[in-house]
Image 1 (cartoon, rainbow, N blue to C red):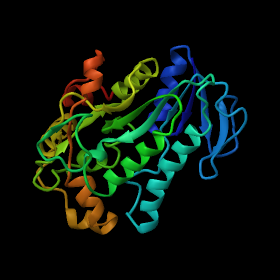
Image 2 (image 1 turned 90 degrees about the horizontal axis):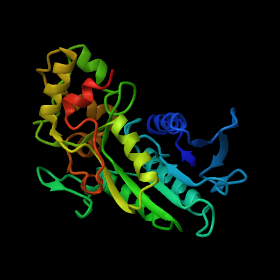
Image 3 (image 1 turned 60 degrees about the vertical axis):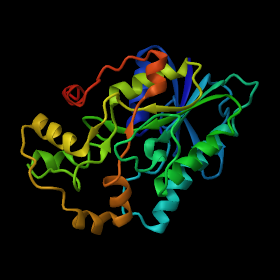
Image 4 (image 1 turned 120 degrees about the vertical axis):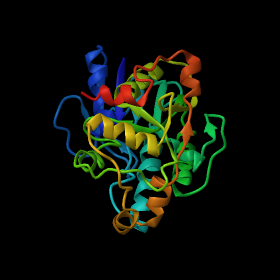
Length: 292
């Protein structure tokens, strides 16, 4: 299979590129700058362009492009960039595909933020969408993907656990120094997935007939308090003091703290489980032990 990947330099895109290449597939990495390797192809999502031959020579596309949610303070400009980067990249992909072309499969990025703050309620792909900035962004993201002329699954991704990057990147040093702690009362749920399982799930979905939303989360979400204890134990460090939210609010803004830290989603990967996908890391402790 020949697969084009948008967002190929990010955590998920890089890991997927390595896995597909290792398993005998060909990868075309869509890059914004001048291509530096034979497997790279230039694209400009803001202008809606992909350099020739576009997507005519691939069997599938995985689009993971988007400005990081936690990359800076949520100013009006950054919030616009978060939304625009997801919708324009998706629209560039779907308008470059033909219902009668070689490319007949699209996996498009999405996020569990679409459910909003769910409290302790368990949600799956049939649950209603929630409220807030992130929920609106993901709805727009998925709406752009709905214009796809080929078989499409949207990847509602949870917090990805990796040794380098992902959810743990911003907190690893803090916990390693013994300064990590729960966020707020710690009762909000955190739906995580190991990088290895996320990449395995994407490869699985490339040849699956599943369409529509698919939750890419592990089968056992945990509260923030449980996550804090488990991660601190993994690093053999204390985690006594709660996170200083006033300081975080000064850096990222109160809206970010409210939506990204104090709210949570208790998500089940119902469609993957029903399809028979086997998670390698079923518990948080297993995922952390597998980081290497």
